[in-house]
Length: 174
Image (cartoon, rainbow, N blue to C red; front, side, top):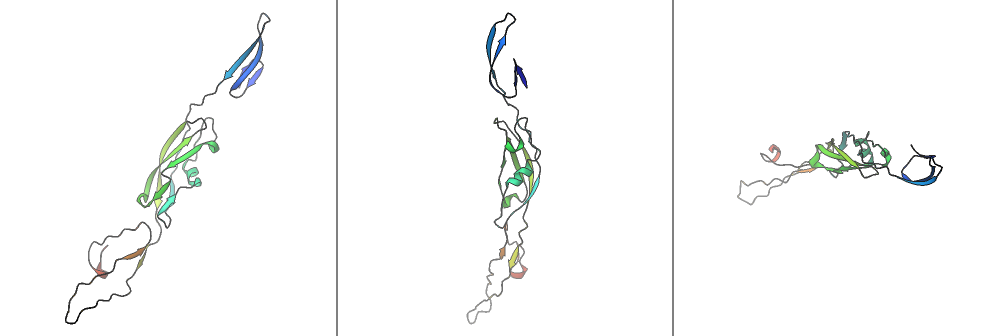
């Protein structure tokens, strides 16, 4: 607190007080007290684990952002009043393993600070292969050999990408 004449000042503002000089003269004094906040928040980053959903994405939630930024503080703004953003907010198949996320905190005065953290990304959607139930080849009369055209491999799951490396049919290598 600040003492101004007979006033105890606890916050910025405009204050007036009447002060008496040694010679007995009254003076009205106006004080314009400003309280500039030029200190950035202290951002702490914490790693988290996320799991992709059936659509091959994960959007960071408010709880995730709170976990990522737990321990972040500011000299004037309470944690609940800080604005905390993350980039990226949406995680996809290309991020499986880990992705670097930026955590940015803004205080009420507009000061900002940031840090980077690894978010560990897992894809646990089970892969199901659909077997080929039957393969029919129809040959014209008198033809004993033909090229067999195998159907495309069918699989359900997210983040899948198959490439046939060698072989045909049940001996195919992917």
